[in-house]
Image (cartoon, rainbow, N blue to C red; front, top):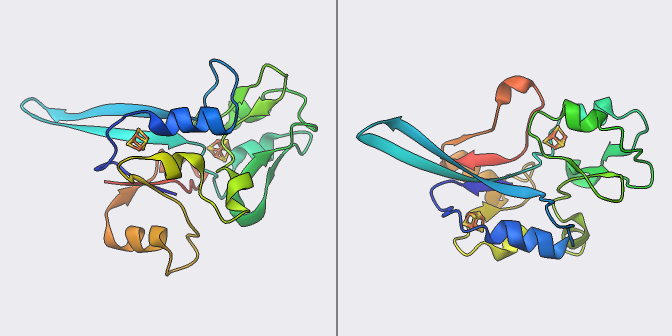
Length: 173
Ligand code: SF4
Ligand code: SF4
C-alpha cells in the first residue's frame, strides 16, 4: 500500500470506512490518522498520515505468537486467526507500530488489508473511500502496478525502518 502524504487531508474517511466495513466494536480502530508538524518557525510544514498495520515482511508479531494464530496469508497479508488466539497479547508487545488491539470478544484484532474484498477483486474499504485518492493498493512485486510505479517515481519512506520488521506500507513524501 502507498499513502500519499501530499494528498491526505486527515478527513478520517478511511478510519470510518474501516470501522463500518469490518464492524469494529466501539472504541476500536484498525487505522488512524497521525498529524506531524515538521521544521522550525516560520519554515513549518505538516505531514498527515493515514496509518495501519504495515503487513511487515519480517513480522515480529507473527514470530512472537505462541499459538500460530498470527500468520502470513496470501500475498504477504498478516492475519490473526481469531479461533486460535488466546488473547495473550505477545503480538501486541512485539508490534513496533501499535497496530493491534484486544477485541472485546477476547482475541487480538488488526487490519486485514480487507482481504475479504481483495480476494474478490476489490480494494480495501479505506482505499476505495478516500476522497483525495491518497491511498493506493496493489502488488509491490508487479512492476506494472500503480503502487510499484509510484514508488519508482516518488520519494517515499516507511515508518521506523530501524525495527527490521520491513514494513510494506509506503508513505509518499
Ligand atoms: S480518507 Fe484519505 S484523505 Fe481522508 S484521512 Fe484517510 S487517507 Fe487521508
Ligand atoms: S505492523 Fe505490527 S501487527 Fe502489522 S505486521 Fe508489522 S509487526 Fe505485525
